Length: 228
Image (cartoon, rainbow, N blue to C red; front, side, top):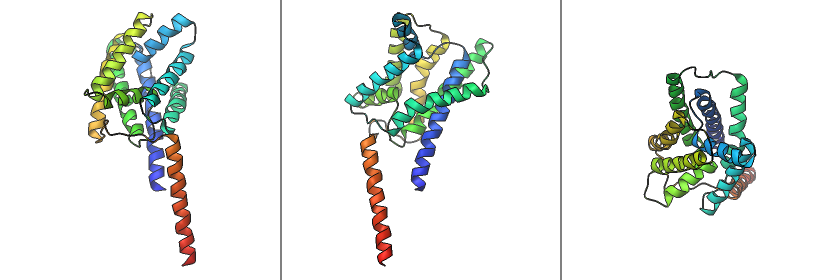
């Protein structure tokens, strides 16, 4: 039970910190993240809102992750459902000011990148599923000789280029995020002794089966104690 509480606490903390990180990067006011540049570009071409585009792109990437063998677990659902919720919470609290000059904006963007990397490590370590973009990073990393940082940077810059071609707006913060996030995550993996090559996430079915087996073991122990 204590382990279960620790895992849930770690996941929630990861989602909370990620929501905070996004708000900090938005309020840095020095450019959209690479993925948001893509979402904006697709939105301009299709007429769909950025929110709808973001959800659609996320679903497509989750399908690709599943095809590539990354487990779609409870943390995947939490990533999709809770990070946006915590983002809205921090926005409503109005505790993160907007940067009023370029220097402060760059500092805030760097802080946001570090927070996003920390959050990623927090919710990936329990191995209960990854977010769509993190799953894509891990899947490619396992199939290549490139490091996590290099793989994530290639993904971010590729997405950035496509979004820019489609008309998305780019700023200096976009470059900082695109280049910095992957290597910040890689450093976080090393500090927490996580091996991205061997990290295997439990899917929802396996997690439920594991919980049922544990419940059965607990019930057996209770019955044995009663017999004694």
